[in-house]
Image 1 (tube, helix red, strand yellow):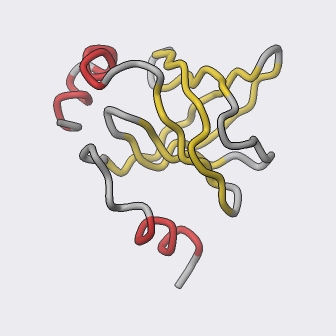
Image 2: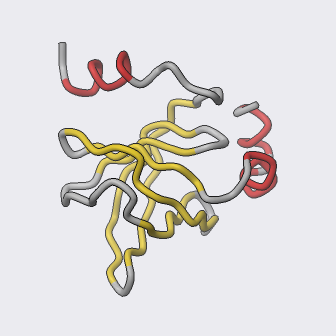
Length: 105
């Protein structure tokens, strides 16, 4: 079983519905910007691929799909993947994502 499959199995017990995606995204950590891939998305957070480690609790802005910026923090980190939690409530995230947000309810 590959790393991606293991992570999907381990982290599927969620409070929010997740949508599998492959979206080019960016994170802004202080004055540094990193390109990332977003693998799944919910109204509460996302799973991203980042080749540098960030500590649990690290805060940053995630820019995703049409320059939608979401203040976020790291919930977990494993094998180059990060689970992130958005700082906005689910209703706000839904409004930010528009029709995509409707599919995440």
